[in-house]
Length: 261
Image (cartoon, rainbow, N blue to C red):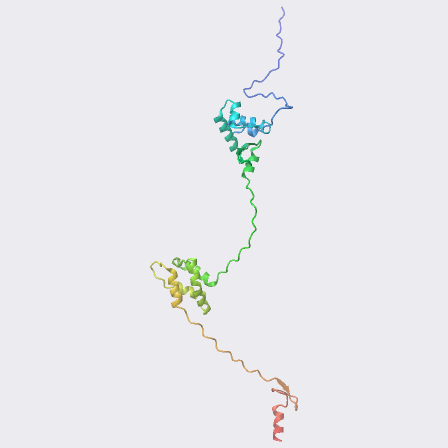
């Protein structure tokens, strides 16, 4: 007896997998290109993703109101309205309200196949017409008296003055400075020997000191005496020596013999 050998199977071995297997055929017409950012969106519901795909596949101008969509699909108006709000929140849909020339208000629906464009358009600020710039008036310079009064609070916090008090007391401080009192001496006069209790009215206290302790003007300096200028040098007509005189002629030695003669 001869042993019969079993014939080997002609079928190729195949791998079994629980994941999806794609059988892709190319589309040549009647198809819509949808990005994976929509088809695999991690935050959109399946109803919103399917509704967005349906809206992107519709021809331009097709009405997509809630009642119109609810008449096509079994989800109902409530779920469709919620899905439309999802698409608006994530930038795939915009429904601005516009007023027609007749006065009637209508809702316009805009579908975006890329949400970044919708978000960028919504976030971009509308440029306002530029107004002509007016030259600013130069700020008035603060004088030494104003700076001195403002700086008093650095010596004693109780001497904090309002802007109105500073402008009111500035002329009195200027009077001290014009009488030759150094700014350090003015500050010392206003900050030395202050009462220990709280100062309720610092401006009144400073005004009293500036008025009651105002020093007199400095005495006028004595007039300067200009020494007389010496006479210019002259050349003696008799001996050719130089001598000082207001007019040319002879020196003293040459004039004496003439006087004796």
